[in-house]
Image (tube, rainbow over all chains, first blue to last red; front, side):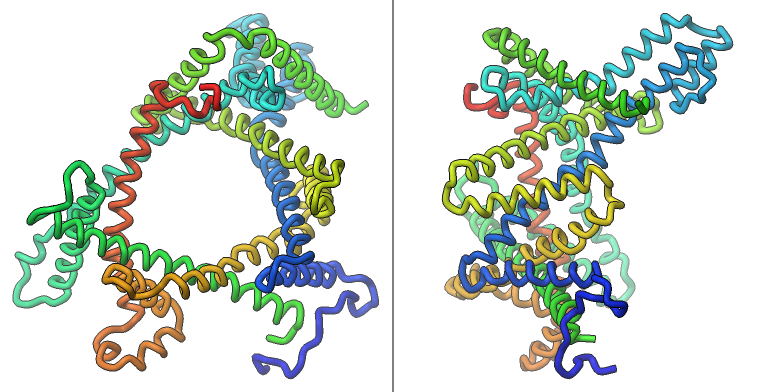
Length: 281
Length: 251
């Protein structure tokens, strides 16, 4: 089958039976929105603005749905439903099965009279539900209080919690993964160079690369060292080589970014030519 | 009435009452310096120290799992509510634009329509819903990838204007970018083969890999080390209450 068909036929909106095809309509909408966004390359216009605003609205809606189903529902709503149902079954001595393992454990203990009374159970139940679910929900509601000027200061509590959590995590994980592990990875061994028998070019090349990496790293760090002027026999040339290393890094990063965007562009053109225009088979 | 529906209704009423109560407390106690400044700082400190403490507990210990479970749940719940703030702002801003008939208000209507339709089908049917699936596959995904791919044109245009080999450093930047770009595609290898002498000794793809392995690693590691140390210092300042800009402009 040829890669390019002669001519093209747009994706039909109706299927073979004459009924409206969801896929056909979807492809047409996606194609129109894609072209609408690309129309910005000519100039800002109605089609671009329409697609742009629609994208913002749909993205915001999608983020809300995602947050609700992935985080809020499994972390707050469902556990509260489960705990409340089990709590009701236990205190009313209902025959209905208890779902939560923690609650099941309590129910067994209550039935066997092994440990604790119903009062103990109610106390620990309330404490657990409060700490795990009600308290963070209160903090969440405090966050929403930001929209009310006189009570906006309440949002400092949830913000402080998130910032404190982030800072605590950053201190240990960054120190471990981004500082200590990176320094550890920079201590390369040149031992194979001294133990090789004869001229082994692969070992020589590897050692040269390792040396260049460590030397480049040291020079780049020297460039970021601002407590002394970059002059003299060591600091001057070293910081200059550090700039070269950083320039190559930025150039390579730029190259990778361009190629990633180009691959997305190719993907969109493939969609337009293949799925919509049915030109490329 | 279904017991679950009754429970969900009670839960909503409970949270509304809680919110009203919180607002009333917030308005009454807004002058208290202890509540406004010191207690949030204590929250921040305790949370941070707990997370640091967790790092020193063996991962198979029950306490480690308890702290991880609790902190993850808290952050997930609080962050979910934080998102609501952003969405309230987005909706009210665009709603005001429509009611006051500001310039381009029609597009705000498109934004709100897109938002509410997605939210309606998403919350009603979940990810398995046909309508939500349609919105995701034929609107969200194509528009997102097109928006990102649009950058390819701007990057190319910016590169054309900025990439001039005016100095040694600019030449290095340009050369590294060109080699990496050529090394990533088949066409690049074909073009490279036309360069005399150099192409006989070096393969462009190997050269791109070498740049990545040696220079990019060295440069990125230097940046990462510097940024991480700064990040850690800033985190310590936050935990100790020296840095309080997240409180807002009043502080």
